[in-house]
Image (cartoon, rainbow, N blue to C red; front, side, top):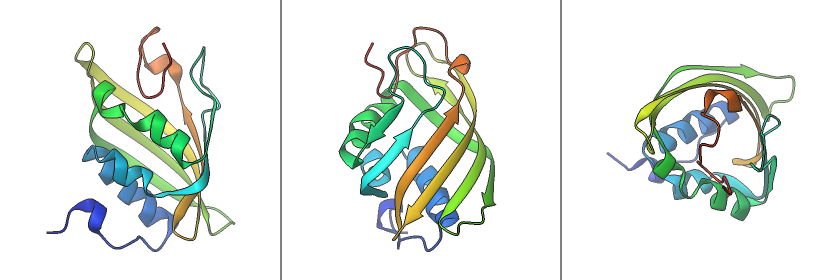
Length: 146
């Protein structure tokens, strides 16, 4: 069976997004970053403190995500609902991710809403609406500069 990163490029934004979730579960961050356009933008409208609100470019996304598996050990996305929009390249995703926070082995259970735009098979925009209240104050993970 081929490795997830060697599978053919997904043909729709929903397929690409589902593929991206498999890569996160496999902890294959380089392959996940490869799904991004060079000028892709990732935004976190609910970020707090010194956590980034906007990442511009594939390299900024890569730097943010590089140590993600060292902080959050994702086990599953038991709930994923993908909504098509009137724009064929844009989807809205409601999902739940579960796992463990590596630092203290506490449970991780987060609900997300994401607005994702894909152009030419690459993510060009990802607005990630996650709640910082779901992570303990002072926690460090994925791109935190603390």
